Length: 161
DNA sequence: AGGCTCATGACTC
DNA sequence: GAGTCATGAGCCT
Image (tube, rainbow, N blue to C red; front, side, top):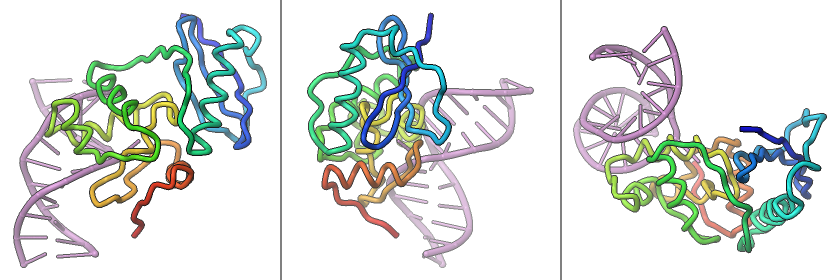
């Protein structure tokens, strides 16, 4: 499967998106050393624009209108978790145990954390809306600073210690 | 098959 | 509040 790496310019920097022929497979936060080559001319303008608009929406805490098709690579369990995350509306949160219950595996709390960490498409699959018990921050693959920023954009309250 | 790591949470002092 | 433990899934070797 061909992977096409694209640069998505936003006000928060250049995100890197990886597309397959079937859809968006991965999204990475801006890095200090951005990829020199981009395949932006090899994927549909529509997908690129949907991706860019969706990222901007989340950065501003607004509802995402439309997403490109997603081409997710993961186990059944991970997909179940990711699907549950996509049902969390902007401005709302769930705890890791809430998510575990939601997918019918109430004891798989830690595994939910693992699946969140394996989420290939942060922001658009809103793993930042998953907090630990007591509105504690928990973790974030892109770094806690990003998680805080995204939560603040959605006016979501969280505890710090 | 076994061991190790967790973005957890509940429990003990 | 620090220490400890059960726990499910994933990723090694």
